[in-house]
Length: 503
Ligand code: XMP
Image (cartoon, rainbow, N blue to C red; front, top):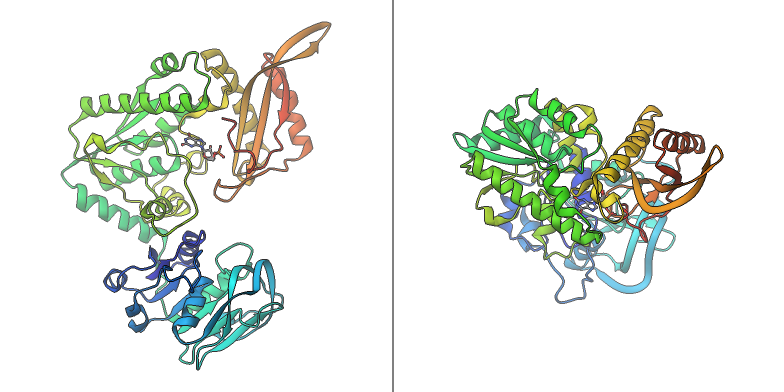
């Protein structure tokens, strides 16, 4: 495996993901992790991540010295490179050669850059710079501003890059990481089959002869988890709460996808209960709280009815684990918790077979487990569902309008091959009514907003440049089919300053 020591860079999880994409298994440990912890993962290579600290800061995190005695190659990225330079007797200085954003390598050589030619664009983000190399080391790349953009030692075991090979703005970054893995001789056997076997093995060994409860939301993580439990042959109950805030046909789609694959699915029709609890409530956070509370109540009732269970299975993913490990200053603060996030008070042992996997890897597992693409490749959908896409109080009539409008928009995106081009697309029913004319009549109809965004992780987003002809078609179709909607607008707000959802 490749052990990545996290010194607090917002990109650390990306390093881990890129290395997995190169089919080498990777794990992220806190920067100061002890040698035994590092050794436990049998590393074939170690990566020191970037981070917000400066090597001059006495409180800055440092790796265990033993890491350098392991005999495996080490790649330092940004802060990691500066740390290596200082540790081996070079010099790092503040300021002067700070670089932020795009830069181009003016020269590059050596094993890290093997097979590369032409323009090499890299992404820089640093205030400190290496100004003197440790004895026996050399600079193997430079930019206009910075003669020390990459370094390596005399033995060919230690490497550093000042830029970030893991981000998309370093287009040839994957080649650089791959070169490092090759030099290190790391095994490249991390495939979806391997990940599936590991997950099955974990579930079987921990939950054999025990009963497992899980909550299914209809999203890819919980659906794949349900299929995994069924495939592993463990005794389980998958509870799917229909809170009445789902999209058109969603419940049936989930039921079809899971029941036919041997999942013991228990659908709970709680639509009336949620609607009653939400009646007259317009504050977005109040809506979220009510939905979360009702969900836990319904789930508890089912747990009592169907139980007892020893385990609660959850589709926790690796980025959540990295974040909540905390203390390393990772800047990617998660803003939302799914309503599926259940409190510890329920007293189950947790089964989280995806806690070392990234979303893309779970999608691959879903593919292997036979999850239909309609579920597997679905856009993210918030736990509180359509309730936060109806501004103001939620009622059955508005839900019905929004459900139909959303379906027209999403179906059109699919028909035009645009669905997979955007990160998320949605319709929002506003409480605003505007004037329109149909025939000789003046009428008031709701204003419906369409929103489609591009994004990598939902943390930032840009509005999708959907073709005008496509938008035109949808904007005509919706009021035609749903006369209560009088006007259709398209949201041009990016995130920040906007959020993806309207509430
Ligand atoms: P925002 O609107 O904050 O959304 O830009 C970012 C992503 O999170 C989803 N989202 C939620 N997911 N519970 C969830 O499970 C919520 O309360 C919630 N609010 C927003 C949103 O759909 C987008 O994918």
